[in-house]
Length: 324
Length: 308
Image (cartoon, rainbow over all chains, first blue to last red; front, side, top):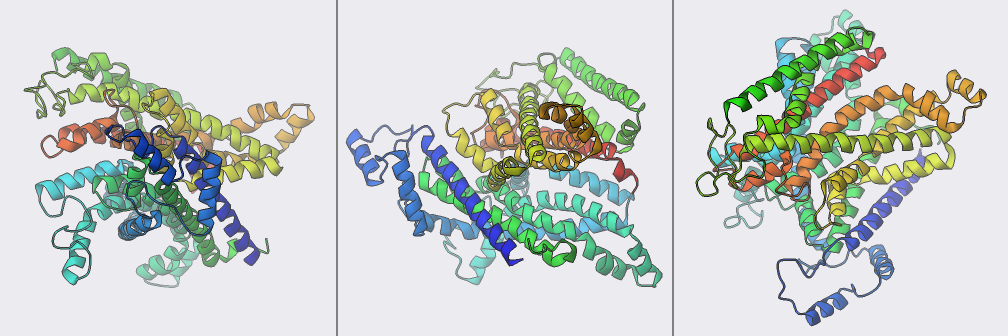
């Protein structure tokens, strides 16, 4: 087991290194330079030269790469050209936003998805099952960012129930440090989390319904019923326990989904998370922010699948890896 | 929209119904075909797909305007839906329905072609890795691990930055090139079990080379999961294209794609919600249809499911 974990971790590090390396070379090869956006022609060639020297962009690409890796080994992610601050700081500011958004979305995703899936499985082929099944299929097929736009239009623009974007009220609550400001943060969080959560929940419900149906038909469930257990206990204790197994994989897979979904949803809601930071950095050719974001996202994806595998081994003794 | 556009649109619906009827008759000859249509959402899904494909092909007939035409930039921007512009006009005074009809060509085309690229590469890589095993398998699968570790939209955004103005065929290739990882894993798993079967050993004993064994004996038997994942994958590609175009990094603007139509309508969504909502609705419908058909295909092609 330990040897297996060590091997997995080593492989994970290798994967992250490969992603960072690929990103490094591709974004350096991208058209345009970080200091001269197409809009402004006002920077003099001397200033440009000085800037390039200052950030080490006058060296050859392999040299820059070795330098970057050396800094990375010391835990330094480099300096953002555009934000004029260390990349690590920019990422550290953005990460909590993405984290809370993902957490809230996952909460909606799993509670709503599980409840709907179980309900549908228990009432298989009833009107409710068919209607919910089709609604789930439809919501699951929407472009996430478009659902975001529609919710924004309905609840923020027309009904004025929720703010139109941003993480908090910029005047009253520039930082979250009091109870009203915390509430304000949650108020801003609702729509983006709902957007990501609903699309996820639709997928989870479809998945959970199938898993539950497979389990309900098994004989040990019939035995539990024959013993005279109440239906609620049979479903929630006996059946659900096994029906949750495939769900663990879904948790691991939800990670990358939330991150990629978040790129667009964060843009729609001007939510200052990793996605928005990465998209802006790519557009502005802010090299080290891009590679830094690639590092963090690939690490999270790898971590997600690693965690899913470990959880699997914990939840199902049959899968526990023997020695190897 | 004049009377002929309506007639053409009705014709498209009839054509789609005909397609469904013909497919149903053909399918009823085989057990898996009957299983396919027993799925309650299979026929409606097929109809929606056939309808949008017909609209895409017949775009000049069903659309009253050219997709780029700015009808009257002074008076006719952001007009609400009317008999003249059934889905309204966008912020640049273009007819939303006409752009939707022509956009179907680009959006559906990108979805199908990019998926074709992805399935071809994924199939080839998966078959090679699963059939030859050893170091080739290890190397290819580590490559797949790396590919899967990068959120796809993020990878696409970085790669698209290599071009100033990306041409649609390049975009198709790029989407295909970033989309084959999951398929290759699936094919590899299938090939791993198939290669141990007797008919493969028999083919090898008869002197068939690896290319022939894979192409003629192994892959045809792995076709079912590949087809299912392709059907489900087209929807993902369409969502990806929409996302990229929405960020301004996909199909370049005057050409209509459903994604960049949403992007064009977004800034004016409070005034003219129709120009951003209808393309999104079209994407949702088509992706839903693809998912429905994909689900039905999975049930139809996998007889083991039938026993349940």
